[in-house]
Length: 99
Image (cartoon, rainbow, N blue to C red; front, side, top):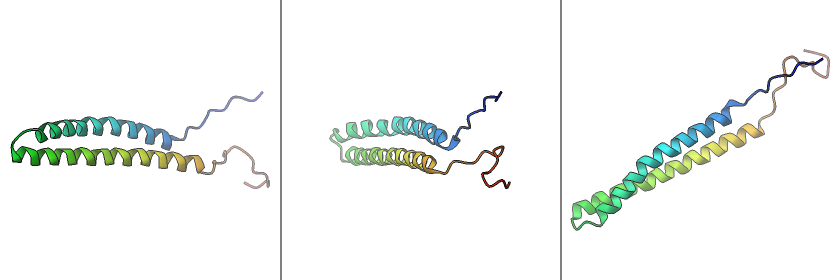
C-alpha cells in the first residue's frame, strides 16, 4: 500500500501573483486620485492650478506605467517558473542506480 504524497507547491508564482495584485490595488487607488484631482485642477482658470494639474496627471500616467511593470513582472516570474526543470524527488532512486 502506497501512502499518498503531499503535493509540493512552487511558491514563486503564487507570491508573484499575490504581490502583483496587492501592488495593483494599492498603486491604482493612489494614482487614480492623482488623475482625478489633476483633471479638476486643469479645468480651473488659474495658471498655477493648471501647472499643478498637469503634474498630477503626469503622476497618474507614471503610476499606470508602474502598474504595467508589476503586471509584466508577474507574468515573467510565472513563465520562468513554468519553464523551470522539475526537481527530482530525493526519495526516488535514480535510473542509473547511483545516488
